[in-house]
Image (cartoon, rainbow over all chains, first blue to last red; front, side, top):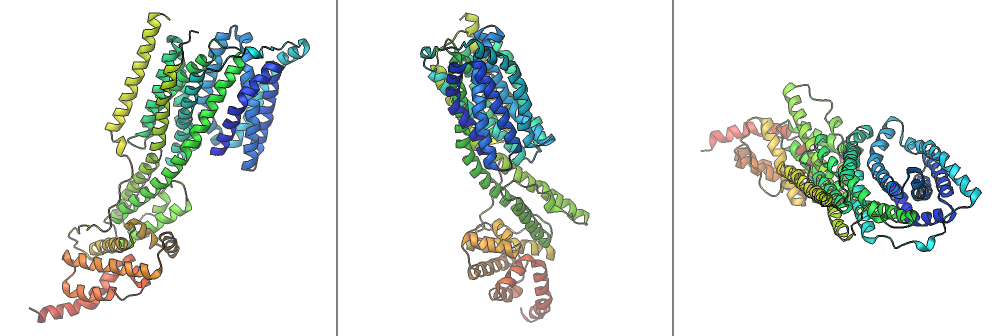
Length: 413
Length: 176
């Protein structure tokens, strides 16, 4: 799964600025229309892929289309919404909302239909978006009006883009690791996990309201980075494997990501022309951050979950061995637990089946049920703790982003 | 930028710091830093016997002591060894993982059984008259039998009691 995510984000990071140059050279309408068509076609290929390599290749092509569509959209928006400033705000907010909404929507579709449906649904959505753009593309082709102000391209805003990359790495960790914790660690179904992580996009809406109240983009960016880090630190130190306890950190991350992504994108674009090129830099920075976050944190998390799984199993077996139940029964239980672990190799197992059938004797049955609860508690502890280091590192990334945020120039929009 | 805009920005930053600190502080205070699997005990450290009464209770602690003793010899956890003894397949995986052969495993399990006899004797659960021949027996049995003794300590101790119990009564009659 990591490589499916990494491949898309890596190509987006590399293709965003060249795609913006293409949009400037050949017209944003035509570029966006072709980009959306490529995105839809590759989405169809993703949905029909029967091999991982095909899926990864199709995702790379989809990223090329996506990069063209997203950067060209920034050139098209001012004409639609009335001003460049408003276009920047909407474009930045759309990016933040998409980042927050993606995991929840993906989980619901995976559970209700299939993972393929995530990609197949993108096809009509992309084509529907392409319809009005075709008119613009046709107009561009007929009049031949495209901007050729390539030499006026200013330097990208280094600090804002650097901060965007760092914060995006932290946010990618929040979204990716939390979904993994819920599904792989706490054994929630994809739809249950989607419902739980929907707290983040809901909180992001609240963050959007704060954006209008605080005009200082640098303050919003700093507050957002602090909230993202605080939420991630909260996820790192969960005191119990309970869904409710993930909600306050998620609310902080949701509000934070909405504030910081939009503020930094506005800062990176503020007063700079052409918008598509600088928008391309922000897309590039954000997706490069996601790639760095995934590549840096996935090995740490993978090693940790193996170690924690091992520790949790040993702690669980210790609970069984130290219990007062019949020695034959306890060794039989230890054997069944071992078999169960082998069946679900590499995953945090659901331990219930290892305890079935329960003993007939009521006293023994009650003791075995208590043991089951204690063993499950050890596994939950292990699964939760396995994510702690990655969440702490992600929180640190968010805090480090405060340095480039502090160095970024104040922008009045 | 207006003064009000600046103060709102400052308020937002300070508020974010405070809310984040409250959340992390509350989670740490509720045990967030120690929410992890419990550490298993070193098998080489003595584990107290809790005054067992019935044969089943004695067998229970005998099993745990034997596993501790064998695991200590092998330098592995008691829990890893218990899982390894569950099935022949699990045993093979265990031997491969830790680079242990049958002879080393047999030696360790016999040592574990001796420790279990010692612990049982020390706890008063096994009389010295039964402990002496038992100690001699467990040091000579083959690996499969030794594993069987650990896996079904209750039957093992029950049999010992049936065979040696009458002899013990006789000896107790003649000895001061």
